Amino acid sequence: MNDINNNTSGVMSPRIEVNRLPLSKQVPLDTPFSVTLVPSTYCNFACSFCPVKEISDKPSLMSIETAKNIIDNANFPQQVKVLHLYNVGEPLINKDFIKIIKYARQTNFAHRISTVTNASLLTKNLSEELIASGVDRIIISLYGLNDDDYLKTTKKKIKFETIYENIKYLNSIKGDCEIFVKVIDRVTPTEQTRQEFINKFKEISTFYSIETILPIWPNFRPEKDDPSQREDFQRGLYEGVPAIDRVACHYPFYSMVVNPKGIVNPCLADWDGLLKLGDTNNSSLNEIWNAKEYQDFRYEQLSGQRKEHPLCRTCGTLKAATAPDDDMDEDRLYLLDKLFGDRIKQSA
Ligand code: SF4
View 1: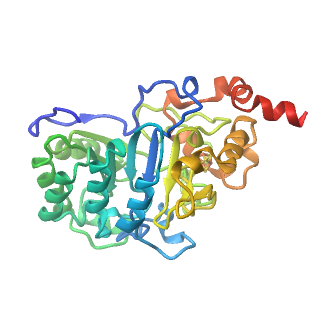
View 2: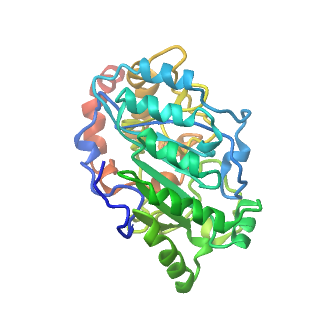
View 3: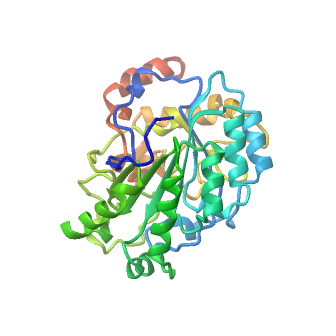
């Protein structure tokens, strides 16, 4: 929690925390830093660059019972650092969403709780409940600065003024909660539109940023004719975080993502849930974290097999959105020996 005053102007900042402790000096972790419970795979928008419409399973919502089962049986030796409550899909569609946050807060499951919303369903009542729930950070995704932008991007008739007023009210009651407003850069193509965004949202946010739409999702390239979707993109997703091609993915070393049905994947990029490293209906998060499936996936990353993996090889997330301190490539071979030396000797 921070002590930011509601009247303070927001600060431009990348959404990702850039000054973390180097991950490769800390692995293996006995408790993941980050756990994501996905509240909803439904969305009330239909943005062309988002894979939510292509998910193979029927859209679903995480029930409070499923969330309680996951949290109560997690059995980690330490507290999780951050609980993320989002992935593709709009969390506020889920009627159990506030209950899930409250339960996670009440049980001290994580040090911080963070969510993302498009703010279109944020009534005053819901804003008040959200702030009272104990959430630490609410990230708001903006898809335009006027009604036409919204129609073009989300394919829905959305009143920009309503979104703006929703955020303004949320910010006015935020207390210790951080309000982070991000906009996609394709709706701020000129200095004038960038400035318009900053002028509008600086006063009603804690942090704000302009983010690039990049081909980050594995096996999903809906806009391949758009030059910004080229595989050789140079700019990162977040301002100030460079795009660098990497060998090993860091996500399986610190992250777990649980879909609404309780199935576990290592990362938010696995939008169709193809990796399936465990099932919280049968095992605790801690058992899954230490199980062979997770270990094998980590081994694949450190031994340089990422580019042969059917999902990871087409994933742009690692290149676009890795905080410098999470980059494992420099220590990859050292970590391969430290974590899997015995396995390598036995198979020699
Ligand atoms: S490379 Fe992409 S799909 Fe594979 S684990 Fe990393 S983020 Fe997930």
